[in-house]
Image (cartoon, rainbow, N blue to C red):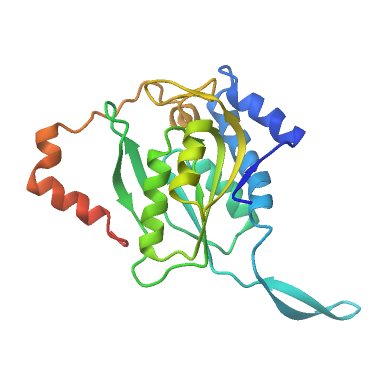
Length: 236
């Protein structure tokens, strides 16, 4: 099942609070963390386990331990609160940040940070990002993780547009998606409607904190091409 859309009443209630324009940043972060925890509980259901024998106060017990090497990959900056929720479930998982922002006019993703280690990969990578709108950003990150060598990739998002989710699954059919809600509409500027707004701004109280787009001449200059190639390499 590549797509899991939650129908749980607790997540629906928390999503309503997340959507509410009057929800302050501290509560927005809390609700996003809680939603991530519950979605992560479902997303981790297929993790591989190995036998482990322990001793209880009353004797021996044949239990299990998680066998998969797991990585949590938050997309900066909006994915930070979500990674907190997932780390409560997977405290031993490694965390590798990837920084992306969307160019204002083209809506194409631009990478500015990448901390994937060069010397190791993982069995399962959980990408966490609140919104799948056009899916340009999430598709780019999935491609980065595939090149890195992640054996299995799972996307956990609070909300998505129908268009964005379909695009993600069309381009990456082996990826599993766990999501709190899917809205049918998306604006010309790439915002989910009715959605939750800009999840990064709402988490950190930085409304209208626009990042200027790259000028075409600067984006195509040899110097900037080298810089962008550098940040695309794991471990940079």
